Image (cartoon, rainbow, N blue to C red; front, side):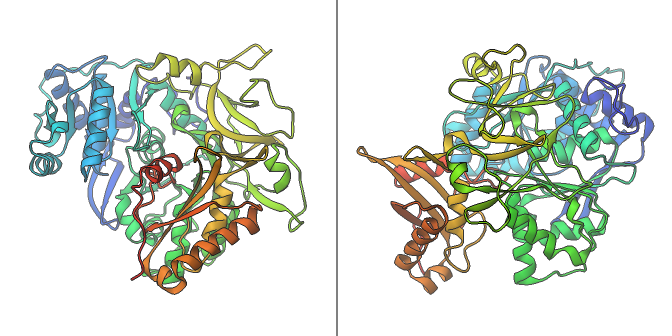
Length: 582
Protein backbone atom coordinates (compact mmCIF):
# COMPACT_ATOMS: atom_id res chain seq x y z
CA UNK A 1 0.00 0.00 0.00
CA UNK A 2 1.29 3.46 -0.84
CA UNK A 3 2.39 5.54 2.16
CA UNK A 4 -0.49 7.48 3.65
CA UNK A 5 -0.04 11.25 3.94
CA UNK A 6 -0.85 11.11 7.68
CA UNK A 7 1.75 8.73 9.13
CA UNK A 8 0.26 9.09 12.61
CA UNK A 9 -2.98 7.55 11.40
CA UNK A 10 -2.97 4.70 8.89
CA UNK A 11 0.52 3.25 9.51
CA UNK A 12 2.50 3.30 6.27
CA UNK A 13 4.47 0.25 7.40
CA UNK A 14 1.36 -1.88 7.93
CA UNK A 15 0.53 -4.42 5.22
CA UNK A 16 -2.21 -6.15 7.22
CA UNK A 17 -4.72 -5.29 9.94
CA UNK A 18 -2.70 -7.28 12.47
CA UNK A 19 0.45 -5.33 11.59
CA UNK A 20 -1.51 -2.12 12.14
CA UNK A 21 -2.49 -3.38 15.62
CA UNK A 22 1.09 -4.40 16.38
CA UNK A 23 2.32 -0.91 15.50
CA UNK A 24 -0.36 0.69 17.66
CA UNK A 25 0.62 -1.62 20.52
CA UNK A 26 4.18 -0.31 20.31
CA UNK A 27 3.38 3.34 19.68
CA UNK A 28 0.26 3.76 21.86
CA UNK A 29 0.32 0.73 24.19
CA UNK A 30 -1.75 2.13 27.04
CA UNK A 31 -4.08 4.39 25.07
CA UNK A 32 -7.76 3.51 24.78
CA UNK A 33 -8.72 1.60 21.65
CA UNK A 34 -12.36 0.62 22.35
CA UNK A 35 -14.92 1.29 25.07
CA UNK A 36 -18.24 -0.53 25.34
CA UNK A 37 -21.21 1.55 26.51
CA UNK A 38 -23.72 -0.53 28.47
CA UNK A 39 -27.28 0.54 27.62
CA UNK A 40 -25.65 2.99 25.23
CA UNK A 41 -24.63 5.21 28.14
CA UNK A 42 -22.36 3.71 30.83
CA UNK A 43 -18.75 2.70 30.03
CA UNK A 44 -18.52 -1.01 30.83
CA UNK A 45 -15.19 -2.37 29.66
CA UNK A 46 -12.19 -0.93 27.84
CA UNK A 47 -9.42 -2.27 25.63
CA UNK A 48 -6.02 -0.62 25.22
CA UNK A 49 -3.93 -1.44 22.15
CA UNK A 50 -1.45 -3.55 24.13
CA UNK A 51 -4.21 -5.50 25.86
CA UNK A 52 -6.06 -6.01 22.59
CA UNK A 53 -2.94 -7.35 20.90
CA UNK A 54 -2.26 -9.77 23.77
CA UNK A 55 -5.83 -11.04 24.03
CA UNK A 56 -6.28 -11.30 20.24
CA UNK A 57 -3.13 -13.38 20.02
CA UNK A 58 -4.43 -15.58 22.84
CA UNK A 59 -7.55 -16.23 20.78
CA UNK A 60 -5.36 -16.99 17.75
CA UNK A 61 -3.26 -19.45 19.74
CA UNK A 62 -6.38 -21.28 20.90
CA UNK A 63 -7.73 -21.44 17.36
CA UNK A 64 -4.42 -22.79 16.09
CA UNK A 65 -4.40 -25.41 18.86
CA UNK A 66 -7.87 -26.44 17.72
CA UNK A 67 -6.53 -27.06 14.22
CA UNK A 68 -7.82 -23.92 12.54
CA UNK A 69 -5.47 -21.96 10.30
CA UNK A 70 -4.85 -20.64 6.81
CA UNK A 71 -7.79 -21.30 4.50
CA UNK A 72 -10.18 -22.18 7.31
CA UNK A 73 -13.15 -20.10 8.43
CA UNK A 74 -15.27 -19.62 11.54
CA UNK A 75 -18.62 -18.01 12.23
CA UNK A 76 -18.57 -15.14 14.76
CA UNK A 77 -21.78 -14.88 16.77
CA UNK A 78 -21.57 -11.93 19.15
CA UNK A 79 -23.48 -8.88 20.31
CA UNK A 80 -21.72 -5.54 20.03
CA UNK A 81 -18.89 -5.63 22.53
CA UNK A 82 -15.22 -6.13 23.22
CA UNK A 83 -15.25 -9.93 22.90
CA UNK A 84 -16.27 -9.60 19.26
CA UNK A 85 -13.24 -7.39 18.57
CA UNK A 86 -10.82 -9.69 20.44
CA UNK A 87 -12.04 -12.70 18.50
CA UNK A 88 -12.16 -10.93 15.13
CA UNK A 89 -8.51 -9.88 15.51
CA UNK A 90 -7.68 -13.35 16.82
CA UNK A 91 -9.08 -14.89 13.65
CA UNK A 92 -7.01 -12.47 11.58
CA UNK A 93 -3.83 -13.42 13.47
CA UNK A 94 -4.62 -17.12 12.99
CA UNK A 95 -5.32 -16.55 9.25
CA UNK A 96 -8.88 -17.81 9.76
CA UNK A 97 -11.55 -16.06 7.67
CA UNK A 98 -14.15 -14.66 10.08
CA UNK A 99 -17.84 -14.70 9.10
CA UNK A 100 -19.75 -12.38 11.49
CA UNK A 101 -23.47 -13.16 11.82
CA UNK A 102 -26.33 -11.55 13.69
CA UNK A 103 -27.25 -13.41 16.88
CA UNK A 104 -30.45 -15.35 16.10
CA UNK A 105 -33.50 -14.78 18.28
CA UNK A 106 -35.94 -16.85 16.24
CA UNK A 107 -35.92 -20.04 14.20
CA UNK A 108 -35.53 -18.09 10.94
CA UNK A 109 -32.34 -16.48 12.25
CA UNK A 110 -31.03 -19.90 13.24
CA UNK A 111 -31.72 -21.16 9.73
CA UNK A 112 -29.70 -18.26 8.33
CA UNK A 113 -26.86 -19.03 10.74
CA UNK A 114 -26.75 -22.61 9.50
CA UNK A 115 -26.83 -21.60 5.84
CA UNK A 116 -23.92 -19.22 6.41
CA UNK A 117 -21.89 -21.83 8.30
CA UNK A 118 -22.45 -24.32 5.49
CA UNK A 119 -21.58 -21.73 2.84
CA UNK A 120 -18.43 -20.73 4.74
CA UNK A 121 -17.43 -24.39 4.96
CA UNK A 122 -17.18 -24.51 8.74
CA UNK A 123 -18.81 -26.13 11.74
CA UNK A 124 -17.04 -23.81 14.22
CA UNK A 125 -19.16 -21.05 15.75
CA UNK A 126 -17.28 -18.71 18.09
CA UNK A 127 -19.53 -16.96 20.61
CA UNK A 128 -20.04 -15.99 24.25
CA UNK A 129 -21.03 -18.29 27.08
CA UNK A 130 -24.40 -16.59 27.47
CA UNK A 131 -25.30 -16.96 23.79
CA UNK A 132 -24.06 -20.57 23.72
CA UNK A 133 -26.26 -21.51 26.69
CA UNK A 134 -29.26 -19.65 25.28
CA UNK A 135 -29.04 -21.35 21.87
CA UNK A 136 -28.55 -24.81 23.39
CA UNK A 137 -31.50 -24.35 25.75
CA UNK A 138 -33.98 -22.67 23.38
CA UNK A 139 -33.14 -24.67 20.27
CA UNK A 140 -32.26 -28.04 21.78
CA UNK A 141 -32.82 -30.78 19.20
CA UNK A 142 -33.33 -28.33 16.34
CA UNK A 143 -31.61 -29.75 13.22
CA UNK A 144 -30.00 -26.42 12.31
CA UNK A 145 -27.72 -26.74 15.37
CA UNK A 146 -26.77 -30.35 14.67
CA UNK A 147 -23.08 -30.70 13.93
CA UNK A 148 -22.20 -27.11 14.83
CA UNK A 149 -19.50 -26.69 17.47
CA UNK A 150 -20.36 -23.70 19.68
CA UNK A 151 -17.19 -22.37 21.31
CA UNK A 152 -17.30 -19.97 24.27
CA UNK A 153 -14.25 -17.81 23.53
CA UNK A 154 -14.35 -16.35 27.04
CA UNK A 155 -13.10 -19.68 28.36
CA UNK A 156 -10.25 -20.19 25.89
CA UNK A 157 -6.82 -20.62 27.48
CA UNK A 158 -4.25 -17.85 27.72
CA UNK A 159 -1.56 -17.51 25.09
CA UNK A 160 1.12 -20.17 25.75
CA UNK A 161 4.64 -19.01 26.52
CA UNK A 162 6.78 -19.03 23.41
CA UNK A 163 3.82 -19.10 21.01
CA UNK A 164 4.42 -16.95 17.95
CA UNK A 165 1.55 -15.47 16.00
CA UNK A 166 1.36 -16.38 12.30
CA UNK A 167 1.99 -13.57 9.84
CA UNK A 168 -1.01 -12.98 7.59
CA UNK A 169 -0.42 -11.84 4.02
CA UNK A 170 -2.07 -8.71 2.57
CA UNK A 171 -4.30 -10.75 0.25
CA UNK A 172 -5.41 -13.24 2.89
CA UNK A 173 -9.19 -13.25 3.34
CA UNK A 174 -9.70 -11.34 6.58
CA UNK A 175 -13.49 -11.33 6.52
CA UNK A 176 -16.42 -13.07 4.89
CA UNK A 177 -19.02 -10.29 4.71
CA UNK A 178 -22.46 -11.77 4.20
CA UNK A 179 -25.21 -9.67 2.70
CA UNK A 180 -27.97 -8.62 5.06
CA UNK A 181 -30.79 -10.28 3.14
CA UNK A 182 -32.88 -12.89 4.94
CA UNK A 183 -34.08 -14.79 1.89
CA UNK A 184 -32.31 -16.98 -0.63
CA UNK A 185 -28.84 -18.40 -0.36
CA UNK A 186 -26.21 -16.41 1.55
CA UNK A 187 -23.39 -14.90 -0.48
CA UNK A 188 -20.04 -14.04 1.10
CA UNK A 189 -17.92 -11.11 -0.06
CA UNK A 190 -14.25 -11.98 0.51
CA UNK A 191 -12.52 -8.93 2.01
CA UNK A 192 -8.74 -8.99 2.31
CA UNK A 193 -6.39 -7.21 4.72
CA UNK A 194 -5.25 -5.03 1.82
CA UNK A 195 -8.87 -4.12 1.00
CA UNK A 196 -9.42 -2.95 4.58
CA UNK A 197 -6.25 -0.87 4.74
CA UNK A 198 -6.91 0.78 1.40
CA UNK A 199 -10.49 1.62 2.37
CA UNK A 200 -9.34 3.13 5.66
CA UNK A 201 -6.65 5.12 3.82
CA UNK A 202 -9.21 6.49 1.36
CA UNK A 203 -11.57 7.33 4.23
CA UNK A 204 -8.75 9.18 6.00
CA UNK A 205 -7.98 11.10 2.81
CA UNK A 206 -11.54 12.43 2.58
CA UNK A 207 -12.56 12.48 6.27
CA UNK A 208 -9.29 12.85 8.24
CA UNK A 209 -9.62 11.87 11.89
CA UNK A 210 -6.78 13.99 13.28
CA UNK A 211 -5.14 13.62 16.71
CA UNK A 212 -8.41 14.49 18.50
CA UNK A 213 -10.50 11.97 16.54
CA UNK A 214 -13.14 9.97 18.42
CA UNK A 215 -15.59 7.48 16.89
CA UNK A 216 -19.02 6.90 18.44
CA UNK A 217 -20.99 4.08 16.82
CA UNK A 218 -24.21 2.15 17.36
CA UNK A 219 -24.01 0.25 14.07
CA UNK A 220 -23.97 -3.57 14.26
CA UNK A 221 -20.36 -4.75 13.99
CA UNK A 222 -21.28 -7.67 11.72
CA UNK A 223 -22.47 -5.16 9.10
CA UNK A 224 -20.04 -3.60 6.60
CA UNK A 225 -20.59 -0.01 7.74
CA UNK A 226 -20.35 -0.97 11.41
CA UNK A 227 -17.23 -3.03 10.76
CA UNK A 228 -15.39 -0.24 8.94
CA UNK A 229 -16.46 2.66 11.15
CA UNK A 230 -16.70 0.83 14.47
CA UNK A 231 -13.62 -1.40 14.26
CA UNK A 232 -11.19 -0.84 11.36
CA UNK A 233 -11.09 2.97 11.03
CA UNK A 234 -10.43 3.63 14.74
CA UNK A 235 -7.87 0.81 14.96
CA UNK A 236 -5.86 1.83 11.91
CA UNK A 237 -6.14 5.55 12.67
CA UNK A 238 -5.20 5.16 16.33
CA UNK A 239 -8.27 6.86 17.81
CA UNK A 240 -10.71 5.61 20.47
CA UNK A 241 -14.08 4.15 19.57
CA UNK A 242 -17.13 4.16 21.86
CA UNK A 243 -19.53 1.38 20.90
CA UNK A 244 -23.17 0.82 21.81
CA UNK A 245 -25.74 -1.81 20.96
CA UNK A 246 -28.03 -1.05 18.00
CA UNK A 247 -31.04 -1.82 20.22
CA UNK A 248 -30.00 0.94 22.64
CA UNK A 249 -30.07 3.41 19.76
CA UNK A 250 -33.40 2.18 18.38
CA UNK A 251 -35.06 2.38 21.81
CA UNK A 252 -33.93 5.99 22.24
CA UNK A 253 -32.07 7.49 19.27
CA UNK A 254 -30.85 10.56 21.16
CA UNK A 255 -28.61 8.28 23.24
CA UNK A 256 -26.28 8.33 20.25
CA UNK A 257 -26.09 12.13 20.23
CA UNK A 258 -25.70 12.20 24.01
CA UNK A 259 -22.69 9.88 23.69
CA UNK A 260 -21.27 12.09 20.93
CA UNK A 261 -21.67 15.02 23.32
CA UNK A 262 -20.16 13.26 26.33
CA UNK A 263 -17.11 11.84 24.56
CA UNK A 264 -16.56 14.72 22.12
CA UNK A 265 -17.18 12.44 19.15
CA UNK A 266 -15.79 13.63 15.83
CA UNK A 267 -16.72 10.76 13.50
CA UNK A 268 -19.90 8.69 13.31
CA UNK A 269 -21.81 6.99 10.52
CA UNK A 270 -25.36 5.81 9.97
CA UNK A 271 -27.94 5.16 7.27
CA UNK A 272 -30.26 8.04 6.45
CA UNK A 273 -33.15 6.69 8.52
CA UNK A 274 -31.10 7.00 11.73
CA UNK A 275 -30.85 10.77 11.33
CA UNK A 276 -34.61 10.86 10.74
CA UNK A 277 -35.21 8.92 13.97
CA UNK A 278 -33.09 11.42 15.90
CA UNK A 279 -35.23 14.29 14.60
CA UNK A 280 -38.43 12.41 15.55
CA UNK A 281 -37.10 11.56 19.02
CA UNK A 282 -36.22 15.20 19.66
CA UNK A 283 -39.63 16.41 18.48
CA UNK A 284 -41.61 13.79 20.40
CA UNK A 285 -39.62 13.43 23.63
CA UNK A 286 -37.03 16.18 23.78
CA UNK A 287 -33.44 15.70 24.92
CA UNK A 288 -32.92 14.30 28.42
CA UNK A 289 -29.46 15.87 28.61
CA UNK A 290 -28.01 18.98 26.95
CA UNK A 291 -26.50 18.25 23.54
CA UNK A 292 -23.23 19.79 22.37
CA UNK A 293 -22.26 18.59 18.90
CA UNK A 294 -19.68 21.14 17.78
CA UNK A 295 -16.91 18.53 17.86
CA UNK A 296 -18.81 16.28 15.40
CA UNK A 297 -17.23 17.01 12.04
CA UNK A 298 -18.07 13.86 10.02
CA UNK A 299 -21.63 12.56 10.15
CA UNK A 300 -21.30 9.98 7.39
CA UNK A 301 -24.67 9.28 5.78
CA UNK A 302 -24.97 6.22 3.59
CA UNK A 303 -28.33 5.03 2.23
CA UNK A 304 -30.28 4.67 -0.98
CA UNK A 305 -30.91 7.44 -1.30
CA UNK A 306 -29.79 10.11 1.15
CA UNK A 307 -32.92 12.24 1.36
CA UNK A 308 -32.74 16.00 1.01
CA UNK A 309 -35.63 16.39 3.43
CA UNK A 310 -33.84 14.29 6.05
CA UNK A 311 -30.53 16.14 5.71
CA UNK A 312 -32.24 19.51 6.04
CA UNK A 313 -34.40 18.41 8.98
CA UNK A 314 -31.45 17.01 10.95
CA UNK A 315 -29.22 20.00 10.24
CA UNK A 316 -31.93 22.44 11.33
CA UNK A 317 -33.02 20.43 14.37
CA UNK A 318 -29.52 20.22 15.84
CA UNK A 319 -28.03 23.54 14.73
CA UNK A 320 -28.70 24.96 18.22
CA UNK A 321 -26.61 22.09 19.64
CA UNK A 322 -23.63 23.15 17.52
CA UNK A 323 -24.04 20.72 14.63
CA UNK A 324 -22.44 22.31 11.55
CA UNK A 325 -24.18 21.92 8.15
CA UNK A 326 -20.93 20.82 6.50
CA UNK A 327 -20.57 17.99 9.03
CA UNK A 328 -23.32 16.07 7.21
CA UNK A 329 -21.30 13.95 4.78
CA UNK A 330 -23.28 11.78 2.36
CA UNK A 331 -21.42 8.91 0.76
CA UNK A 332 -21.88 5.80 -1.32
CA UNK A 333 -20.49 2.35 -0.72
CA UNK A 334 -21.16 -1.37 -0.65
CA UNK A 335 -19.63 -4.51 0.82
CA UNK A 336 -18.19 -5.57 -2.57
CA UNK A 337 -15.98 -2.46 -2.38
CA UNK A 338 -15.14 -3.17 1.30
CA UNK A 339 -17.41 -0.21 2.06
CA UNK A 340 -16.88 3.38 0.99
CA UNK A 341 -16.57 4.23 -2.71
CA UNK A 342 -17.34 7.97 -2.76
CA UNK A 343 -17.76 10.55 -0.03
CA UNK A 344 -18.61 14.22 0.37
CA UNK A 345 -15.82 16.17 2.09
CA UNK A 346 -16.40 17.60 5.55
CA UNK A 347 -15.44 21.17 4.61
CA UNK A 348 -18.57 22.01 2.59
CA UNK A 349 -22.30 21.45 2.77
CA UNK A 350 -23.70 18.54 0.74
CA UNK A 351 -24.34 19.21 -2.94
CA UNK A 352 -28.01 19.43 -3.92
CA UNK A 353 -29.15 19.21 -7.54
CA UNK A 354 -32.72 20.02 -8.53
CA UNK A 355 -33.54 17.76 -11.45
CA UNK A 356 -36.54 17.17 -13.68
CA UNK A 357 -38.63 14.23 -12.51
CA UNK A 358 -39.87 13.44 -16.02
CA UNK A 359 -36.33 13.39 -17.44
CA UNK A 360 -35.15 11.19 -14.56
CA UNK A 361 -37.82 8.65 -15.44
CA UNK A 362 -36.45 8.61 -18.99
CA UNK A 363 -32.90 7.98 -17.77
CA UNK A 364 -31.49 11.44 -18.42
CA UNK A 365 -30.45 14.46 -16.40
CA UNK A 366 -32.25 17.80 -16.63
CA UNK A 367 -31.10 20.54 -14.25
CA UNK A 368 -33.82 22.88 -12.98
CA UNK A 369 -34.05 25.74 -10.54
CA UNK A 370 -35.14 24.99 -6.98
CA UNK A 371 -38.92 25.13 -6.78
CA UNK A 372 -39.47 24.81 -10.53
CA UNK A 373 -42.38 22.69 -11.74
CA UNK A 374 -41.41 19.02 -11.81
CA UNK A 375 -38.14 19.60 -9.93
CA UNK A 376 -36.97 17.15 -7.26
CA UNK A 377 -33.82 17.31 -5.14
CA UNK A 378 -30.96 14.82 -5.32
CA UNK A 379 -28.12 14.80 -2.78
CA UNK A 380 -24.60 14.20 -4.06
CA UNK A 381 -22.60 11.28 -2.69
CA UNK A 382 -19.27 13.00 -3.25
CA UNK A 383 -16.30 11.98 -5.38
CA UNK A 384 -14.07 8.93 -5.28
CA UNK A 385 -10.61 9.02 -3.75
CA UNK A 386 -7.65 9.16 -6.14
CA UNK A 387 -7.15 5.38 -6.10
CA UNK A 388 -10.77 4.50 -6.96
CA UNK A 389 -12.37 4.99 -10.37
CA UNK A 390 -16.14 5.32 -10.90
CA UNK A 391 -17.78 4.83 -14.31
CA UNK A 392 -21.40 5.14 -15.44
CA UNK A 393 -22.23 2.35 -17.88
CA UNK A 394 -25.30 1.26 -19.83
CA UNK A 395 -26.19 -2.05 -18.11
CA UNK A 396 -27.46 -3.63 -21.34
CA UNK A 397 -24.82 -2.63 -23.89
CA UNK A 398 -22.00 -2.19 -21.34
CA UNK A 399 -20.97 0.96 -23.18
CA UNK A 400 -19.93 4.04 -21.23
CA UNK A 401 -22.81 6.49 -20.80
CA UNK A 402 -22.37 10.03 -22.12
CA UNK A 403 -22.61 12.92 -19.69
CA UNK A 404 -26.16 13.56 -18.57
CA UNK A 405 -27.31 9.94 -18.83
CA UNK A 406 -28.20 7.62 -15.99
CA UNK A 407 -26.53 4.22 -15.99
CA UNK A 408 -25.15 1.52 -13.73
CA UNK A 409 -22.36 2.50 -11.35
CA UNK A 410 -19.14 0.54 -11.97
CA UNK A 411 -16.06 0.71 -9.72
CA UNK A 412 -12.37 -0.11 -10.12
CA UNK A 413 -9.73 0.24 -7.42
CA UNK A 414 -7.83 -1.41 -4.55
CA UNK A 415 -10.89 -1.49 -2.29
CA UNK A 416 -12.77 -3.86 -4.60
CA UNK A 417 -13.02 -7.17 -2.75
CA UNK A 418 -11.64 -10.51 -3.94
CA UNK A 419 -15.02 -11.82 -5.09
CA UNK A 420 -17.71 -14.11 -3.73
CA UNK A 421 -16.61 -17.20 -1.85
CA UNK A 422 -17.17 -20.37 -3.86
CA UNK A 423 -19.16 -18.61 -6.59
CA UNK A 424 -16.96 -18.35 -9.66
CA UNK A 425 -19.72 -17.52 -12.14
CA UNK A 426 -21.22 -14.78 -9.99
CA UNK A 427 -17.75 -13.43 -9.25
CA UNK A 428 -16.99 -13.16 -12.97
CA UNK A 429 -20.32 -11.46 -13.65
CA UNK A 430 -20.06 -8.96 -10.79
CA UNK A 431 -16.31 -8.38 -10.38
CA UNK A 432 -15.08 -9.01 -13.92
CA UNK A 433 -17.01 -6.47 -16.02
CA UNK A 434 -15.37 -4.63 -18.92
CA UNK A 435 -16.54 -1.43 -20.58
CA UNK A 436 -17.33 -2.15 -24.25
CA UNK A 437 -14.70 -0.81 -26.62
CA UNK A 438 -12.34 0.34 -23.88
CA UNK A 439 -9.18 -1.08 -22.33
CA UNK A 440 -8.80 -1.31 -18.58
CA UNK A 441 -10.76 -2.91 -15.81
CA UNK A 442 -12.08 -5.29 -14.75
CA UNK A 443 -14.80 -3.34 -12.96
CA UNK A 444 -17.17 -4.13 -10.13
CA UNK A 445 -20.80 -3.95 -11.24
CA UNK A 446 -22.70 -2.47 -8.30
CA UNK A 447 -26.27 -2.97 -9.51
CA UNK A 448 -26.98 0.65 -8.56
CA UNK A 449 -28.03 3.40 -10.94
CA UNK A 450 -26.67 6.92 -10.98
CA UNK A 451 -24.80 9.65 -12.82
CA UNK A 452 -21.75 11.84 -12.34
CA UNK A 453 -22.09 15.63 -12.45
CA UNK A 454 -19.09 17.94 -11.99
CA UNK A 455 -17.07 15.00 -10.72
CA UNK A 456 -19.61 14.01 -8.04
CA UNK A 457 -21.68 10.84 -7.95
CA UNK A 458 -25.46 10.99 -7.63
CA UNK A 459 -27.27 7.73 -6.88
CA UNK A 460 -30.70 7.28 -8.46
CA UNK A 461 -31.72 3.83 -7.24
CA UNK A 462 -31.23 0.08 -7.40
CA UNK A 463 -31.29 -1.46 -10.89
CA UNK A 464 -33.36 -4.49 -9.87
CA UNK A 465 -35.83 -2.39 -7.87
CA UNK A 466 -36.79 0.07 -10.62
CA UNK A 467 -40.52 0.08 -11.45
CA UNK A 468 -41.02 0.40 -15.22
CA UNK A 469 -44.26 1.82 -16.61
CA UNK A 470 -44.73 2.66 -20.31
CA UNK A 471 -40.99 2.72 -20.87
CA UNK A 472 -40.34 5.11 -17.98
CA UNK A 473 -38.33 4.37 -14.83
CA UNK A 474 -39.90 5.03 -11.44
CA UNK A 475 -37.52 4.74 -8.50
CA UNK A 476 -39.11 2.95 -5.53
CA UNK A 477 -37.60 5.29 -2.94
CA UNK A 478 -39.52 8.20 -4.50
CA UNK A 479 -42.77 6.21 -4.37
CA UNK A 480 -42.04 5.26 -0.75
CA UNK A 481 -41.32 8.86 0.21
CA UNK A 482 -44.69 9.89 -1.20
CA UNK A 483 -46.44 7.05 0.64
CA UNK A 484 -44.88 8.10 3.95
CA UNK A 485 -46.50 11.53 3.57
CA UNK A 486 -50.00 10.05 3.30
CA UNK A 487 -50.92 10.43 6.98
CA UNK A 488 -49.76 12.11 10.16
CA UNK A 489 -47.93 9.62 12.36
CA UNK A 490 -46.37 7.45 9.64
CA UNK A 491 -42.68 7.14 10.45
CA UNK A 492 -39.73 7.56 8.09
CA UNK A 493 -38.54 4.43 6.30
CA UNK A 494 -41.92 2.73 6.75
CA UNK A 495 -42.81 1.79 3.16
CA UNK A 496 -41.74 -0.60 0.42
CA UNK A 497 -42.76 -0.32 -3.26
CA UNK A 498 -42.34 -3.08 -5.83
CA UNK A 499 -43.92 -4.66 -8.91
CA UNK A 500 -45.57 -8.08 -9.13
CA UNK A 501 -46.79 -9.96 -12.19
CA UNK A 502 -50.35 -11.27 -11.80
CA UNK A 503 -50.14 -13.28 -15.02
CA UNK A 504 -51.67 -10.60 -17.20
CA UNK A 505 -49.83 -7.41 -16.26
CA UNK A 506 -47.33 -5.88 -13.87
CA UNK A 507 -49.01 -4.45 -10.77
CA UNK A 508 -47.57 -1.85 -8.39
CA UNK A 509 -47.80 -2.79 -4.72
CA UNK A 510 -47.02 -0.40 -1.88
CA UNK A 511 -46.59 -1.87 1.61
CA UNK A 512 -46.89 0.59 4.49
CA UNK A 513 -45.94 -0.14 8.07
CA UNK A 514 -48.30 1.51 10.54
CA UNK A 515 -49.55 1.23 14.10
CA UNK A 516 -52.94 0.99 15.72
CA UNK A 517 -53.18 4.67 16.56
CA UNK A 518 -52.69 5.80 12.95
CA UNK A 519 -55.18 3.17 11.75
CA UNK A 520 -57.74 4.20 14.35
CA UNK A 521 -57.44 7.89 13.50
CA UNK A 522 -57.63 7.37 9.72
CA UNK A 523 -59.38 4.08 9.11
CA UNK A 524 -57.82 1.41 6.90
CA UNK A 525 -59.66 2.29 3.69
CA UNK A 526 -59.05 6.00 4.05
CA UNK A 527 -55.36 5.39 4.75
CA UNK A 528 -55.05 3.19 1.67
CA UNK A 529 -56.73 5.84 -0.44
CA UNK A 530 -54.45 8.53 0.99
CA UNK A 531 -51.43 6.43 0.01
CA UNK A 532 -52.76 6.04 -3.54
CA UNK A 533 -53.43 9.77 -3.78
CA UNK A 534 -50.01 10.73 -2.40
CA UNK A 535 -48.21 8.48 -4.88
CA UNK A 536 -50.29 9.76 -7.78
CA UNK A 537 -49.66 13.38 -6.76
CA UNK A 538 -45.93 12.71 -6.42
CA UNK A 539 -45.26 10.42 -9.37
CA UNK A 540 -48.44 10.46 -11.51
CA UNK A 541 -48.48 6.73 -10.93
CA UNK A 542 -51.46 4.52 -10.06
CA UNK A 543 -50.96 2.10 -7.16
CA UNK A 544 -52.72 -1.21 -7.74
CA UNK A 545 -52.58 -2.49 -4.17
CA UNK A 546 -51.80 -0.97 -0.76
CA UNK A 547 -50.93 -3.35 2.08
CA UNK A 548 -50.99 -2.08 5.68
CA UNK A 549 -48.79 -4.12 8.00
CA UNK A 550 -47.92 -4.01 11.69
CA UNK A 551 -45.22 -1.65 12.84
CA UNK A 552 -41.83 -3.35 13.17
CA UNK A 553 -42.59 -6.11 10.63
CA UNK A 554 -41.32 -4.52 7.40
CA UNK A 555 -38.25 -6.54 6.30
CA UNK A 556 -35.07 -4.51 6.75
CA UNK A 557 -31.35 -5.13 6.54
CA UNK A 558 -29.21 -5.08 9.68
CA UNK A 559 -28.44 -1.41 8.99
CA UNK A 560 -32.14 -0.55 8.70
CA UNK A 561 -32.59 -0.32 4.93
CA UNK A 562 -35.88 -1.62 3.56
CA UNK A 563 -35.59 -5.01 1.84
CA UNK A 564 -37.95 -4.62 -1.08
CA UNK A 565 -37.34 -8.05 -2.59
CA UNK A 566 -37.77 -9.80 0.77
CA UNK A 567 -41.00 -7.81 1.28
CA UNK A 568 -42.19 -8.81 -2.18
CA UNK A 569 -41.51 -12.49 -1.41
CA UNK A 570 -43.49 -12.27 1.85
CA UNK A 571 -46.33 -10.50 0.03
CA UNK A 572 -46.53 -13.21 -2.62
CA UNK A 573 -46.43 -15.90 0.07
CA UNK A 574 -49.23 -14.21 2.02
CA UNK A 575 -46.97 -13.82 5.07
CA UNK A 576 -47.11 -10.06 5.65
CA UNK A 577 -48.79 -9.42 9.04
CA UNK A 578 -51.81 -7.14 8.60
CA UNK A 579 -52.07 -4.09 10.85
CA UNK A 580 -55.07 -3.71 13.12
CA UNK A 581 -56.55 -0.66 14.83
CA UNK A 582 -56.32 -0.55 18.59
